[in-house]
Every structure is written in C-alpha cells, then in structure tokens.
Image (tube, rainbow, N blue to C red; front, side, top):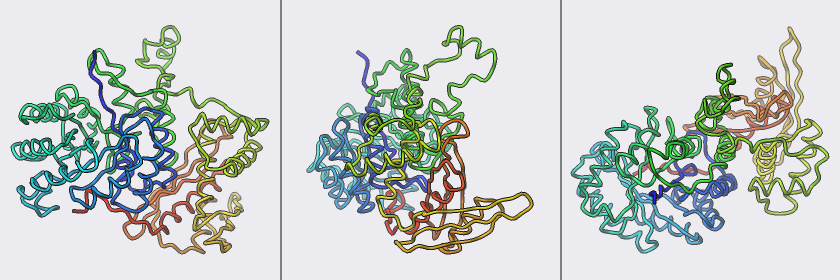
Length: 514
C-alpha cells in the first residue's frame, strides 16, 4: 500500500500575502468551497489574529467546510493561539498552525530574542495550543537557514509538547533541491521523536525551485505533507504551485509511489477562480493550468497527438479540468438552467433575491454575446457580490469618444457613498480618459502600478477582464472589472481598486510583526 501524501493549501493565507491579492470574506468562502471540491486535505483559511475580517472569514469557512481540515495560522503567543481556536470552533476538523523564527538572522534582527527564549516560547506555544486541539502544526520560520543543532533541539521539544506536524519552512526560497531534501532527512534522523509527527515542506519560489524543493523534501527527505497554493500564488515570487506538485506526483507515480486524495478535474476551475478573484492572471505557458499547457502549435507535434496522444502528452487536458469551460448557456436558457449551473460550479447564493439579481445580469449579458461560458458566470457572481457589499464607489454609466486625430474624451457617472458624481476628462486613449475622469472627482493621489487586460474566454465577443493595481501610503491593492466593453471593464476595475484603498481594514503580516 502506497503512502498517503497530505496536500495543505495556503492560498487563503500565504497566497493572500501577494501584494494586492487581498480577498473579501465572501471571496474566501468561494475559494474554500472550491478547495473542498478539489479535496485538499487541509485548508489554511487565514491568520485569525491579523484582523477582524480574517477572523470572520476563518469562522465562516470553519462552519461551511465539512470534508477538509480547516487551519488558522498563529504566532507563538497565547493571544494569537486563543484567537485561532475561537475562529475554528465550528469546524468538523481543525488545526492550529503556530510558528516562530529559528534562524540566527531572524532571532537577532526581527524577534530580538535569544535562542533560549525562542526555545521556551516555542514549547509554551504548543503546550497552550494543546488545550484547544490535538491537531497542532509547528513551523520553524526560516528553518532552511537555521543552525542544525538548535533546530533539532527546538523540534524535539515541540513534538514532546504535542505538535503532530512539523513543517520545515524555506521561507525565503533559499533552498536547492538536493540540499533541502537532505535537510528534511537529516532532521528526521536526528530528532529522536521524529516518528511521532508528520513532516511537512513549505517552499517559496524566489529562485524558481519551490516545486523541485518540495518534491525533493518528499522523495529524499521523507516528508508526507506539501504546503502549496493555487497558481503558485504568494508573496514575492510565490509559493509551491499545487497544480504542479499534484500532477508531478500523479504523472510520475512510478517514481514517487504516493497516494493523493485530490480530484484533479477540479484543478483548472480552482485556478480560474483564484485568478479571477485576485486579478493575478495565469501566464499562458504556466504548467498544467496555462492556456498553452495542452496546445500543440508545432505541426509535427499536432500530427503525433492525432495519431497517438501520448507521443507528446504526458497527461490529458480532461484530467485536470480543461473540459469544464465549454459553452453552457445562451439567451434562451431559463432561470432553472442558470440556477443548476450555479450549483454545478459550487456557487451558493444567500437568497433567492441574489439568484434573481445574478440571473438578470446573465440575461443582459446573453443579449450582448451569444454564448455564455463558466468564466462569464463567475464574473457575473463577482460583480453582483461587489454590488451587494454596498461599495464606497460604484459605476453608474460612462460615455467615451475617440476619433483618429482627435484627443479621446470621456464622461463617467459614479456614486461615492450613495452620492452621484460626474467626471469629465481627456486622455491619451479611451481608457486613460475614463480613468482621468474618475480621478478628476476622487483625487485619490494613488500611483497606478499595473494595468492589464485579459479575455475571459475566446473570440471578440468575450468579456474583457481588467486588472488595475494601485499603491498609496504603502498599501497595494488590486481591482478587477469585467465587461464585454473593455473601457467599461477598466472603469469598474479602477473603482474596485479605489474601494479597497478606501477600506479601513488593516491586516497584520505575521512574518513582519514580532
């Protein structure tokens, strides 16, 4: 019987630490539902002590998710751990994940603590967490740069206190596969009680080796849990990509010999959902979930695939969910068909009124384009959710004029806390004019870091998805807008980003706050 490998997804926690990737409670719930359909073993739903919003999101997810273990991060102190325990009360299965830095650099510069103080705090944290659950994970932050003797001492002590999972964190992506795999193996060999815990790997992609390091930690080191995110989302260069490690383990089961509980057909739907919610587009040549991942442009390759697909395909597009975005509905589709498709996509509306509002938007879209895809429905639901939240800014209407040889102009009508504002401006192009028109009234003073356009589906009828990234006073936010009209999508995206800037919700970054 092959060993079981635990897939621990941290999209909602570590993934959210990407600049601008913050998610609302409802968005987190939608992703958590999809992760449950994907059948990940553990969902790290957030960091309960970071903000009231994060606490409420974890609490909601704990009450909704039944088949996956729900986890909250907590620094190694009583307040954080108690807060995590409170958020997880309603879960069928819960885990508290506590951590403290163990590298000389982090202990001296960030924590300003001696190794003995860190040792004691790690022990006390796990001991305190035992009051609330038997499922406790401990991570030595920056473990890959820690003194080996000290690291062994800490890990032995926390296992004695009741830690059931030990996570070897390559926090800054410093590891290389052979050395990282050896580190995990050495720790397991040198820690006397290592057999009493599941060993885990958590790698970052700063050198582009997160997936390779994670697999080395499993194969060479004997780890039996991988911590990862959808699309490799995460701060800096990102985390280990769930879709890549899962398909590597599945495709090369002859080498790894490990069992997975993952429903791989849900990988692409999960990828699209996370991309759409966060505004982080998936690069076309991304393994498994990129648009070109199963595209055979070369004539020789095409010929080979037609004769025998395994000549150039080592896995099937259908196995990872690429068939899930077929045409589903048109303008003649009724309310029941629409509602049924919502259920199939795992979208649960809070009331019939919400279903009706989304259906009305669907009919409006169906009048504009003949074929409605799953991605269109996801975009509709997101837009409706924004409207329901009663955003600070909301687009009412816009008009823009552009003509060869003339400077484009725009007029935008939008609301600010229910008050109607009208902005008019010119710009270098129609989009620039629209954004200038909004700014003429808002005067946010924000710096625009990114403007990106992506077609949600194929063809010129596709809805455009626009991402706008703004920065102000050290805060970075992403705004996403969708519409068949690219200019209107741009206005929605800009207002969405402004809404996030105007939100007063501040979150603690667990790694930056001692």
